Image 1: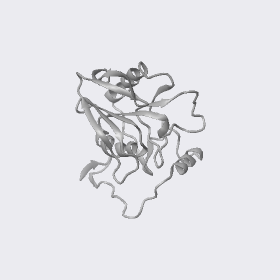
Image 2: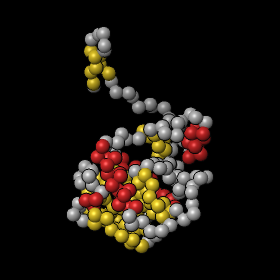
Image 3: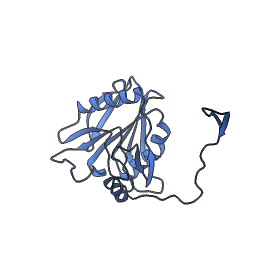
Image 4: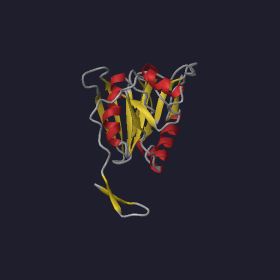
Length: 208
């Protein structure tokens, strides 16, 4: 239990907010979009839709922001024609609309003016993880595996490595990636697009 002092009075005990015991409403992607269009949620609201829940986005530390910029620059140098690199932009899944730190998407004459990229448009999702490491290793990984996103990287600022997940299960009772490897700062991470390795990036280039 935490204790806080009021400006003009004695210290007051503050219990953490209780989790509601009643059912909590889940939203579809369409309902989420409707709320944004209606102004109920601002387009820059600090939330993202994960598995039907509105989840607060993690606060970004300076190392997190620096790593995000480094990842984007490194990927920009080697993505093949017909693909582009976005940062902190939404992708639309069946029941979620996460906003990955970095994503490699198809760009062959596509501007996505009528909707965000979907799973078939995405070659790679990258999450930069410090405070968000637990979420990125669990709920985010499950969502991306369920959607069949071919590659998922966690730039792990806590353990100073890049975790690479490939071979997604797709829809399953327990969605996951079948292949997982961690790359240390001294190693190079292969970038695979459309089933073909198109280049390698030094893990040290992504870890500030």
